[in-house]
Length: 215
Image 1: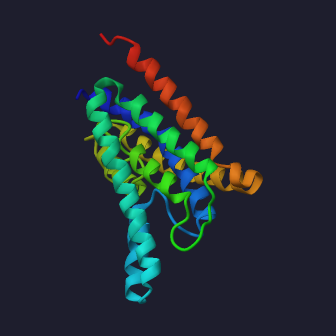
Image 2: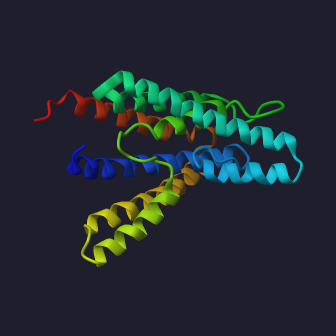
Protein backbone atom coordinates (compact mmCIF):
# COMPACT_ATOMS: atom_id res chain seq x y z
CA UNK A 1 0.00 0.00 0.00
CA UNK A 2 1.40 3.36 -1.06
CA UNK A 3 2.47 5.80 1.65
CA UNK A 4 0.08 8.43 0.26
CA UNK A 5 -2.82 5.99 0.65
CA UNK A 6 -1.84 5.25 4.24
CA UNK A 7 -1.73 8.97 5.05
CA UNK A 8 -5.13 9.52 3.46
CA UNK A 9 -6.69 6.61 5.36
CA UNK A 10 -5.22 7.87 8.63
CA UNK A 11 -7.07 11.15 8.11
CA UNK A 12 -10.25 9.38 6.94
CA UNK A 13 -10.20 7.43 10.21
CA UNK A 14 -10.42 10.61 12.31
CA UNK A 15 -14.18 11.22 11.82
CA UNK A 16 -14.79 7.52 12.42
CA UNK A 17 -12.96 7.85 15.75
CA UNK A 18 -15.35 10.69 16.61
CA UNK A 19 -18.26 8.40 15.70
CA UNK A 20 -16.87 5.72 18.02
CA UNK A 21 -16.48 8.21 20.85
CA UNK A 22 -20.06 9.39 20.38
CA UNK A 23 -21.45 5.84 20.50
CA UNK A 24 -19.20 4.88 23.41
CA UNK A 25 -20.48 7.78 25.51
CA UNK A 26 -24.11 6.97 24.69
CA UNK A 27 -23.51 3.30 25.45
CA UNK A 28 -21.80 4.11 28.76
CA UNK A 29 -24.76 6.23 29.84
CA UNK A 30 -27.48 3.95 28.49
CA UNK A 31 -25.93 0.63 29.59
CA UNK A 32 -25.02 1.57 33.16
CA UNK A 33 -21.28 2.10 32.76
CA UNK A 34 -20.40 -0.41 30.07
CA UNK A 35 -17.93 0.54 27.36
CA UNK A 36 -19.14 -0.47 23.91
CA UNK A 37 -16.00 0.35 21.90
CA UNK A 38 -13.19 0.48 24.47
CA UNK A 39 -12.35 -3.18 25.04
CA UNK A 40 -9.18 -2.43 27.01
CA UNK A 41 -11.34 -0.80 29.68
CA UNK A 42 -13.91 -3.58 29.47
CA UNK A 43 -11.22 -6.23 29.87
CA UNK A 44 -9.82 -4.42 32.93
CA UNK A 45 -13.32 -4.26 34.41
CA UNK A 46 -13.68 -8.00 33.70
CA UNK A 47 -10.53 -8.72 35.67
CA UNK A 48 -11.74 -6.60 38.58
CA UNK A 49 -15.12 -8.37 38.59
CA UNK A 50 -13.38 -11.75 38.66
CA UNK A 51 -11.12 -10.68 41.51
CA UNK A 52 -14.09 -9.35 43.49
CA UNK A 53 -16.04 -12.57 43.02
CA UNK A 54 -18.90 -11.05 40.99
CA UNK A 55 -19.64 -13.77 38.43
CA UNK A 56 -22.76 -12.09 36.98
CA UNK A 57 -20.91 -8.86 36.27
CA UNK A 58 -17.93 -10.80 34.92
CA UNK A 59 -20.20 -12.77 32.59
CA UNK A 60 -21.78 -9.57 31.25
CA UNK A 61 -18.36 -8.07 30.55
CA UNK A 62 -17.15 -11.25 28.88
CA UNK A 63 -20.22 -11.18 26.61
CA UNK A 64 -19.41 -7.57 25.67
CA UNK A 65 -15.89 -8.58 24.62
CA UNK A 66 -17.33 -11.50 22.67
CA UNK A 67 -19.88 -9.31 20.90
CA UNK A 68 -17.20 -6.81 19.93
CA UNK A 69 -15.00 -9.58 18.57
CA UNK A 70 -17.90 -11.14 16.68
CA UNK A 71 -18.67 -7.83 15.01
CA UNK A 72 -15.04 -7.47 13.97
CA UNK A 73 -14.94 -11.03 12.59
CA UNK A 74 -18.11 -10.53 10.53
CA UNK A 75 -16.83 -7.19 9.21
CA UNK A 76 -13.47 -8.74 8.30
CA UNK A 77 -15.23 -11.47 6.34
CA UNK A 78 -17.54 -9.03 4.57
CA UNK A 79 -14.63 -6.73 3.82
CA UNK A 80 -12.65 -9.55 2.24
CA UNK A 81 -15.60 -10.51 0.06
CA UNK A 82 -16.40 -6.90 -0.88
CA UNK A 83 -12.93 -6.01 -2.19
CA UNK A 84 -12.76 -2.32 -3.08
CA UNK A 85 -16.31 -1.92 -1.75
CA UNK A 86 -15.08 -2.85 1.74
CA UNK A 87 -15.56 0.57 3.33
CA UNK A 88 -19.17 1.17 2.18
CA UNK A 89 -20.21 -2.41 2.99
CA UNK A 90 -18.71 -2.38 6.50
CA UNK A 91 -19.97 1.13 7.25
CA UNK A 92 -23.40 0.07 5.99
CA UNK A 93 -23.28 -2.81 8.48
CA UNK A 94 -22.31 -0.37 11.24
CA UNK A 95 -25.20 1.93 10.31
CA UNK A 96 -27.66 -0.97 10.28
CA UNK A 97 -26.54 -2.22 13.70
CA UNK A 98 -26.67 1.25 15.22
CA UNK A 99 -30.13 1.72 13.72
CA UNK A 100 -31.23 -1.52 15.37
CA UNK A 101 -29.68 -0.35 18.64
CA UNK A 102 -31.66 2.88 18.40
CA UNK A 103 -34.90 0.88 18.45
CA UNK A 104 -33.84 -1.59 21.16
CA UNK A 105 -34.41 -0.88 24.86
CA UNK A 106 -31.36 -0.05 27.00
CA UNK A 107 -32.67 -2.19 29.83
CA UNK A 108 -34.12 -5.65 29.99
CA UNK A 109 -34.60 -8.49 32.40
CA UNK A 110 -31.70 -10.43 33.84
CA UNK A 111 -28.44 -10.18 31.94
CA UNK A 112 -27.13 -7.79 29.35
CA UNK A 113 -29.54 -5.22 27.90
CA UNK A 114 -30.79 -5.83 24.32
CA UNK A 115 -29.20 -2.57 23.16
CA UNK A 116 -25.73 -4.00 23.72
CA UNK A 117 -26.30 -6.84 21.23
CA UNK A 118 -26.47 -4.32 18.38
CA UNK A 119 -24.22 -1.47 19.46
CA UNK A 120 -21.20 -3.46 20.66
CA UNK A 121 -20.74 -5.52 17.47
CA UNK A 122 -21.23 -2.29 15.49
CA UNK A 123 -18.16 -0.86 17.17
CA UNK A 124 -16.21 -4.05 16.54
CA UNK A 125 -17.14 -3.81 12.86
CA UNK A 126 -16.18 -0.13 12.68
CA UNK A 127 -12.56 -1.04 13.31
CA UNK A 128 -12.46 -2.99 10.03
CA UNK A 129 -13.91 -0.26 7.82
CA UNK A 130 -10.58 1.05 6.55
CA UNK A 131 -7.83 -1.36 5.48
CA UNK A 132 -4.39 -0.42 6.70
CA UNK A 133 -5.69 1.45 9.75
CA UNK A 134 -4.74 -0.41 12.91
CA UNK A 135 -7.96 -0.14 14.87
CA UNK A 136 -10.18 2.91 14.91
CA UNK A 137 -11.28 2.70 18.54
CA UNK A 138 -7.79 1.95 19.95
CA UNK A 139 -7.00 5.53 20.96
CA UNK A 140 -4.49 4.54 23.65
CA UNK A 141 -2.29 3.47 20.76
CA UNK A 142 -2.86 6.84 19.11
CA UNK A 143 -1.31 8.60 22.09
CA UNK A 144 1.80 6.42 22.04
CA UNK A 145 2.08 6.77 18.25
CA UNK A 146 1.74 10.54 18.72
CA UNK A 147 4.69 10.56 21.11
CA UNK A 148 6.83 8.43 18.82
CA UNK A 149 5.95 10.44 15.69
CA UNK A 150 6.54 13.75 17.50
CA UNK A 151 10.03 12.73 18.57
CA UNK A 152 10.79 11.44 15.07
CA UNK A 153 9.70 14.76 13.57
CA UNK A 154 11.75 16.77 16.08
CA UNK A 155 14.78 14.65 15.24
CA UNK A 156 14.22 15.24 11.52
CA UNK A 157 13.46 11.56 10.86
CA UNK A 158 9.74 11.85 10.17
CA UNK A 159 6.90 14.07 8.98
CA UNK A 160 5.10 16.45 11.32
CA UNK A 161 1.84 15.29 9.72
CA UNK A 162 2.26 11.90 11.40
CA UNK A 163 1.98 13.21 14.96
CA UNK A 164 -0.72 15.71 14.00
CA UNK A 165 -2.87 12.86 12.69
CA UNK A 166 -2.52 10.88 15.93
CA UNK A 167 -3.33 13.91 18.07
CA UNK A 168 -6.34 14.61 15.87
CA UNK A 169 -7.58 11.05 16.48
CA UNK A 170 -7.43 11.52 20.25
CA UNK A 171 -9.16 14.91 20.02
CA UNK A 172 -11.84 13.38 17.79
CA UNK A 173 -12.60 10.74 20.42
CA UNK A 174 -13.02 13.38 23.11
CA UNK A 175 -15.17 15.56 20.84
CA UNK A 176 -17.30 12.58 19.84
CA UNK A 177 -17.78 11.51 23.45
CA UNK A 178 -18.78 15.06 24.39
CA UNK A 179 -21.32 15.10 21.58
CA UNK A 180 -22.64 11.67 22.59
CA UNK A 181 -23.19 12.74 26.20
CA UNK A 182 -24.92 15.92 25.04
CA UNK A 183 -27.15 13.95 22.66
CA UNK A 184 -28.08 11.53 25.42
CA UNK A 185 -29.01 14.40 27.73
CA UNK A 186 -31.12 16.09 25.06
CA UNK A 187 -32.61 13.17 23.10
CA UNK A 188 -32.55 10.28 25.57
CA UNK A 189 -33.38 7.03 23.80
CA UNK A 190 -33.21 8.70 20.38
CA UNK A 191 -29.56 9.73 20.79
CA UNK A 192 -28.30 6.76 18.77
CA UNK A 193 -30.22 7.96 15.72
CA UNK A 194 -27.55 10.62 15.15
CA UNK A 195 -24.48 8.33 14.95
CA UNK A 196 -26.56 5.81 12.96
CA UNK A 197 -27.32 8.52 10.42
CA UNK A 198 -23.68 9.60 10.41
CA UNK A 199 -22.53 6.02 9.71
CA UNK A 200 -25.05 5.76 6.88
CA UNK A 201 -23.79 9.03 5.39
CA UNK A 202 -20.20 7.77 5.67
CA UNK A 203 -21.22 4.57 3.87
CA UNK A 204 -22.74 6.65 1.08
CA UNK A 205 -19.60 8.76 0.71
CA UNK A 206 -17.45 5.64 0.72
CA UNK A 207 -19.64 4.08 -1.97
CA UNK A 208 -19.28 7.18 -4.13
CA UNK A 209 -15.50 7.05 -3.71
CA UNK A 210 -15.42 3.33 -4.59
CA UNK A 211 -17.30 4.03 -7.83
CA UNK A 212 -14.71 6.58 -8.90
CA UNK A 213 -11.96 4.98 -11.00
CA UNK A 214 -8.48 5.55 -9.61
CA UNK A 215 -5.57 6.39 -11.85
